[in-house]
Length: 360
Image (cartoon, rainbow, N blue to C red; front, side, top):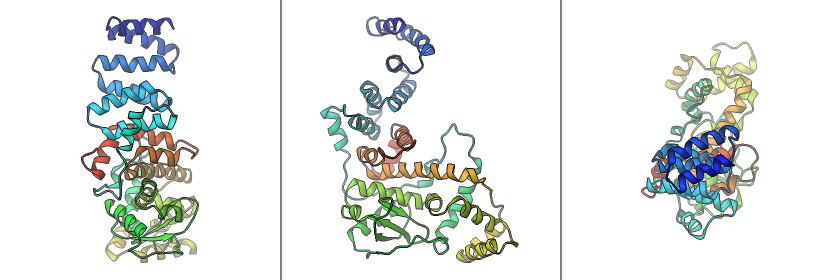
């Protein structure tokens, strides 16, 4: 407490940010989680014009303490000055979720309400599967690189059954088609039926898409865009495949693609089905390729990473961070935290601009 009081005095009364930081570093050695020390560190770094370091300080504190008003406003202040308004909206949405947002912060988030689908373009695979500092992922990237060009042809082998399809003129079908177009998915086949999730997509072209009746009734609203964007984002990567198949089926698939003359009848049958589904040129490429391998325990990790990437796509497509956070706030596990880490970063603003234009 004494070091913290001294740091506050140095910064606020004497404008000595260097001296304040020296005291704060010592305080954080004793208690790295001290909220006041972490917040004051962000302010001292901002005073020294060490903007990137200040961003990191405010951002990490806000993610750990969602009700820390000053961290949210410090981050919003810097990001707003740099033109990253979607990040400002995310920071304000965090405060709203915690019940401590001001009227002006509510209004700022309201300004991100949109009607209809995005008109821009997003290459979903450009959203990194792994964090920059994560090294243990080369096997996942290799599998992604190998499988992604094949997935659109596997719809006849690994089907997502649709029992209540609607025509292309249905408002929900038209809205889903627009969202798919933003991801380079030219055609979507929509079925309105309730399931475990509000929206789920399968493999193939057109992309099979199930949407709940409740969601389909409001295709112009942000929750529709979140869930449909999330589902179609998964269809543009390996996400849908990983949800359709369990670990054993995924291992069987790679084994079937890797072994030219399988002894097992099950593997041989799978290989026959998969190769038959591909165009001839692609089939020959696969037959001449080294098929990557993945240990069974890695499939679930890969699945979780794809879910987190799909969440980021849903956030971007929804247009409003408040809506995206509300959709995930009751889901257990690290997904909400991972979404916050993305939504409070500069890449969120940059990808948002690609989808929605100049407001980003």
